[in-house]
View 1 (cartoon, rainbow, N blue to C red):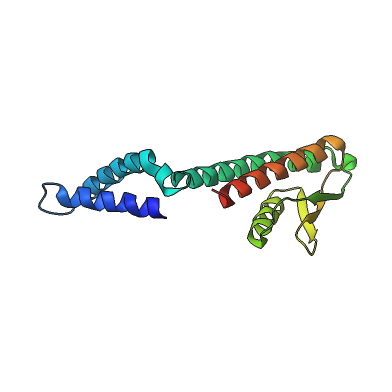
View 2: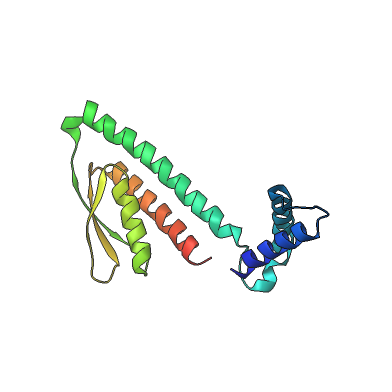
Amino acid sequence: MAQFLLNILIAILWTLFGDQDRFYWSTFLRGYLIGLIIVFFIHQFFGGKFYLYKFWVIVKLFALFNYELITSSLTTSRYILFNSGDIHPGLVTYETELKENWQVTILTLLIILTPGSVVLRISEDNSKLLIHALNQDSLENQKLVKSIRNYERLILEVAYT
C-alpha cells in the first residue's frame, strides 16, 4: 500500500510541478509512469515485492481460469455430443494446502465455474474437498488435479505477496 501511495504522490507532484496552467490527465499519467519506475527501483526498502506483482498474479489467475473454462467446456461438449455412453462420473477427494476461508472459497468457486466438476462438500477444517467429476478415467483425473493445483498455487501466490 505504501508503494502505491508513493507512486500516486510522485504523479501528483509531477503534475503540480509541470509548467501548465491547468490539470491534464496525460501529465498525471506520465508522472504515474515515472513514479512506477522510481518505486520499482526502491521497492526493496519497503520490505516486500513490487506492488504490481500481485496485479500480475491476478491477471495470470484470470488467464488460467479462462483457459480452463474454454478447454473444459469443449471437453464436456465433446463427451455430451459424441461419447455420452462412455462417461463414467465419480467422486474425487482433493486435499488442499489452503488455510484461510476466503482462499478455499475462491478455489471452490473456480472449480464449480469450470464445466464438468462440482464441489459437493468441504471438510470441517477446510483441508479436503469432495469433487464430483463428469468423467472418472485416469487421464481426466490427472487433468482435474493438475488444474486445481495450478489454481491453488496462484491463490497462494496472491495471498502471500
